[in-house]
Length: 138
Image 1 (cartoon, helix red, strand yellow):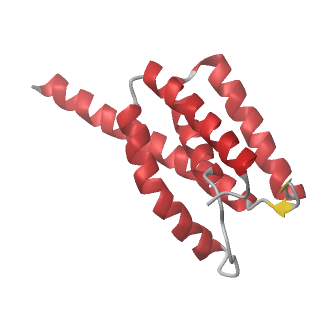
Image 2 (cartoon, one colour):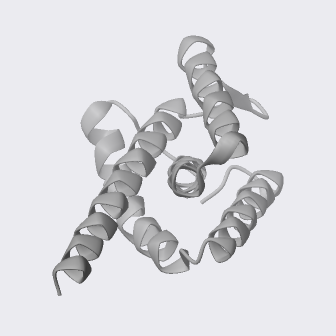
Image 3 (cartoon, rainbow, N blue to C red):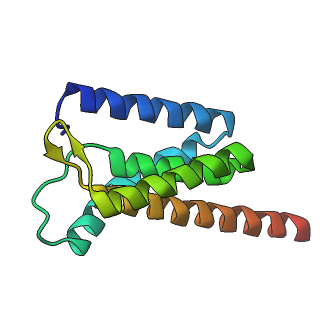
């Protein structure tokens, strides 16, 4: 569910950008797996951290996580600059909140999604490192 059509379109454009970045890095499988696991885990985390939460609409939390994951995997000055800007945005939202056309944005979803993206990136790095070490032994 989304708040309105512009909200849905904005989320879809963000998803398209993430998928294009993922294509360049050959990580569509990781993006798909993170999305499939991330959606229910994000919902569980939201309601665990904020039991009073009564609704959540959109993909923005998941999108924050996917973007963090892709940028961490990509690395480089541009990726780190974008990650810094996202961290500043998340800090601003945490302090000041956010609204979309009169609706309060659940900024906790953005922070939890970003944290999930870091966790997924670290897990992916660990798996790649283990595979590399095994290939070296064989």
